[in-house]
Image 1 (tube, rainbow, N blue to C red):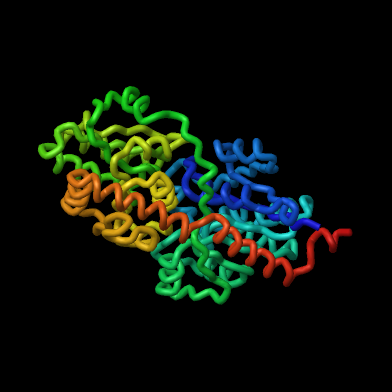
Image 2: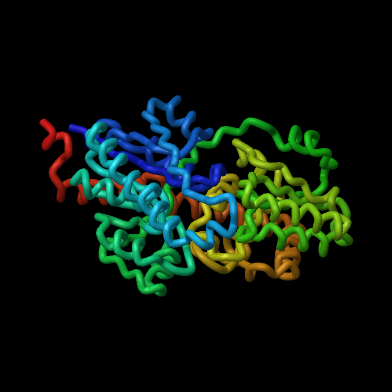
Amino acid sequence: MTSRILFVEGNTDGTVGGSYYIMVDLVLGLDRSRYEPIVVFCDENIVAERLRKAGVRVLVIPPPRPLVFRARWLNIALGPLKRVVNTFRGFLLPALAQARVLRRERIDMVNLNNSITTNHSWMVAARLAGIPCITHEMGMVDSYSLRARYLGARLDAVICLSRAIHDDMRRLGVDLPRAVVVHSLFNPERYVHAETPEALRAQWGIPAGAPIVGVVGNVKKWKGQETIVRATHLLRDRYPELRCVLAGGSSPSDMPYREHLEGLCRELGIEKRVIFAGFQPNAIDYMRLMDVVVHTSTSPEPFGIVLLEAMLLGKPLITTTIGGPAEIVLDGETGLLVDPGQPELLAGAIDRMLSDPAAAAAMGRKGKERLASEFALERTLGETTAIYDRVLSARPRARARAT
C-alpha cells in the first residue's frame, strides 16, 4: 500500500523561486510504488503545469483575502477587531476547510514546503485530521512568533536545508527536538538547454567576446543585486565591454527595488551594460551565457539552489560569506567568497576570475566534482524518504482508519 503525501507550497507573492524547484525534484524523485504525491499551490504557475505533465495531481487552493479597510483611519481605529477577524478568516476557517481536504483525499502525511513561520493552518488541519505533518525549513528570519514556536514544536519532523538554518534557529531559541539537516534535493536531469549562448548574445545585443557576469534569482532587495550593479560600474574601465545580466522576476512589492536598480544604472552611466532579463523559465541557459555566476544576497541565504545549478555547468562561482552558500562553495577551491554588500570586494573577485580564466575554469571543474559527491540526488532523496518512513511508521494510516 502506497503512502499518500500532500505537498503544500505556501508562497503567495506570485513569483516562482527555489522552493518550487526543490519540491519538484523531491516529488518527481519519489518511488511511486511507495509514495503517491499530491501537490497544493496557492495559484497557477509554471511548476504546477510541469508536475501535471509528469502525472502528478495538483490542487490550487487560493489563500483567503485579509480584511483591509480602505480608509487608513479605520484600519487604525478598528485594528483589534481587524486582527480578530483576520485570525478567524485567515487561520481558523482555512484550517477547518483544509482538514476536510485531507480527509477527502485520504492523505497519510502532510509535507509543508516552506518554514515553521508559514502554513500554520495546514499544521492545525493535519492535527484535526489525525495525521502526521512535517515541514521543510527553507527560511532564515529575524524572529519566530509564539504561534510558530508552538506549532513548530508539535511537527513530526522539521527538515532544515542547511546547517546555517539549523544553527540560526537555535541561536534564536528555537531548538526543536525533531529538527534535522538534509541538504536541498537537486536533480541534474531536470535541466534541458533551450537557447544557446550565441542566441542569447544576439537577443540582448551583447558583442561577441564581451565578458559576462550575472545573478540568477528574483530581484529583491535582500538578494543584493545592487552590489553587482555597483561592481560593474567599478570595472567599467578595466573591462570596457563587460555586461552584467540579472535574470529574475519581481513581485509587485519588489518593483520599487527593481526601479531603484534601473535608476542607479542610469545614474552611474551603465544602463547599456546591465541587462534586466526578467523571469526566465529556463534560467540555466543564462548561466551558460555567463563567464562568472555571482550570488549577492545581503541577508543570509538559507541554501542557494542556484549555486548547484552553476556547479552543474562547471561555472566559476562568487558568493557571499553568510548562510547556506558558505557551506556549498569552498573558498579558493570551488569558487570565491566575499563579504555581502561590498561592491569593491566583489569587483576584485570578478577581476580575479576574468583575468585568470584558467584558474577560474579549474574552480568550476572542482565545483562540478563537489556537486556530484556532496549533493547527489540519491543521497538527499534517501535521507528524506528515511524520515518519511520513520514518521509514517509511528502513526496509523488515515486510509486504514477510513476503511
